[in-house]
Length: 227
Image (tube, rainbow, N blue to C red; front, side, top):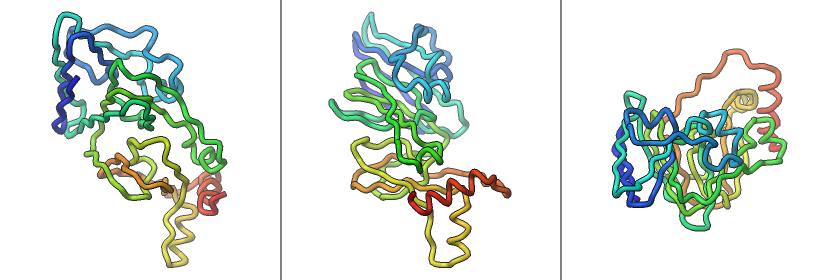
């Protein structure tokens, strides 16, 4: 199997006997596919996949009669595809919001649950994990890049090796007023403890509400304290 990506276009080339599962909204205009009922890996992270419409409506393309090429065009005017290759035995977190599809060789999909109170207050406690070997295709309206930084905005993170340890934090500037604002703001970061590469969006626009609810103030205060 070979996947070629170029900004808002991609091409999945299957060898004889291989198969690929696509999110329904991604595979449009391609006549040779089968609907997946039940969906592939039905007990693998069902909540997150249902929430992001990557559970029901999956489409399967199999190269039964010989090599096959599946051309893809993104739904955004300036979208971007990204291929993730997961080695055998590795487990990668995949941002389900940007899941476009995965190959039939993927061994398993499961949900990793963070039991630390901070992750529950931040509503970021369910992590979709894909077991290799296999290839995963992501799609978004911003470019992706692999970074070796340790801290990122939560919504920008697309993929990383689940064996890495991480915690949550907020920006902590030197000025007191800025520090107080960050305690109650909606800006949250995931901070990795172990070195490694993280796939992130290069740009992410977050709209902040002028008025914060009491719940938002409490959960970001707890984050600041690393409760």
